[in-house]
Image 1 (cartoon, rainbow, N blue to C red):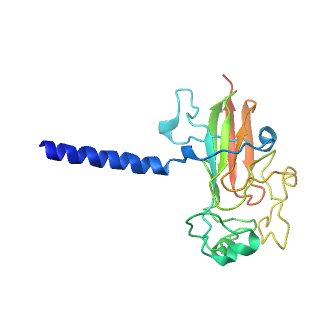
Image 2 (tube, rainbow, N blue to C red):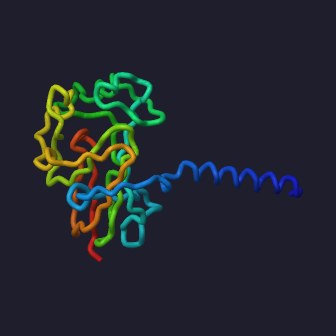
Image 3 (cartoon, one colour):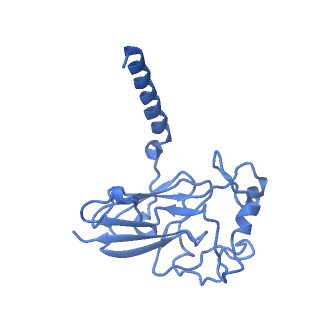
Length: 208
């Protein structure tokens, strides 16, 4: 390979690394909710390549996501959308809430937790961040159920579900903010958004 070709290859590699670094979420500021130990807990990782030899995941981060379209004025009546770019209009969001094949709310799949299932070691803390354009909660519940937004404002968000007892007092996490979670004992722990109750996650904590 000539020196010129080698130089071009090196420059392309550096450009690729720089582009990937710009997309990394690590540089975002974090706001820690004072009740994080009570209101939520999650960590990220998922995928075989992220698993340690004991089955736990190496990463301890979970993102609350949505894909609201900030160009659509339909979102203004329900609090707006602060994403820089999004693809889901308010009309599409409402249309996807239910299905003729289900008696309970289905919900738009862009509104989700990523990952939805995490395995961590006891004693590890987890950060949960709202990377969407809408307000969410990440609330620990005994059983999955409905959320805290009543009709008519609920627009069918809780259709067919019994409200989870933990949801009425749940804390909102605005877009861009985070909560730090710690102190989860060994076992399975369920979490859901108490605004969009199909946004669910389970954290399995393994004893040392």
